[in-house]
Length: 357
Ligand code: NCD
Image (cartoon, rainbow, N blue to C red):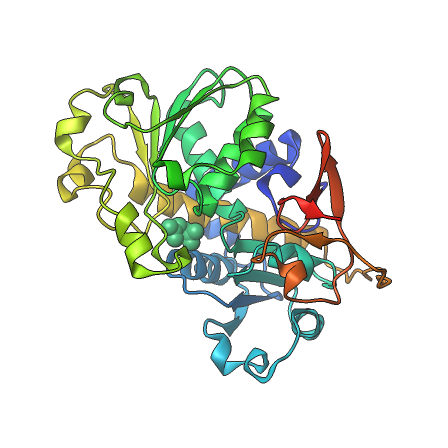
């Protein structure tokens, strides 16, 4: 396997992904064969942000592999409340655990954690940026239901500006060709430009549109998302955006018989209750698939890195700053400069926003 940490789904090679799918299928078919695979392993779950599904599915995954789980789900009960840096927390936790799962509201936090960890780090969501294990769950569900990642027409609908599940999943499609991707949102909640650029360069057709009704008939997959209430500055701003896109049985009359309806969950009002009973809705199966693919991921990362790795020491140069106030590099000021070239500009490697010189 060629990746040590899982920070971005796009870190995984096609070969490694095929191996993960095979393993998840086998775990799903014969779970009893895997009950002691991680018997001596400890997983730390560091959740700085609320989570139900992701945290529980990670914890269940490790317990079903025979391992143990430590961690917190409320940073108020940990040393972070005393002002401890992310770097110190990660260094300490890597001394206790064999694998660390981190969710943090700040963009790029998981990548920053991976710079200091001696054990594999899994990004369980970094602010509005990425959510790679949700993408693994989604891609696993897509291949099980549709059997392919190409020649698909997919609609992404809802909060495309703040939804990290959409960012990760849309980015994943830059690996594949000949798809037609519709991004349906209000003007204020459009997909970030860096993802549009990535997709435009990769041989997929992209449409940025306002209406779900007008395009639903074309879709093989519809990926609905909630408006991310917690990412808005005020209740008024949130309310101006909520309730605009609602999938109901009326709209679904126009859709294909084999449409695959997906949602990362939790859902609020963007899917009417009657849609849950439509056989095309697969979001509950999707959530269950998340358990098997996370078991496969934990197992492979623990097997591959049963030894500690010494991270390099990072010098502290005078550095350029990221323009994104929600980027970890603006919160934890000891972090080294991490910049990558992209087209004619420079992107911050922590959060993928542009960099100020
Ligand atoms: C998502 C998340 O946390 O980004 N939930 C999840 O992990 N299944 C989606 C969301 O909160 O809207």
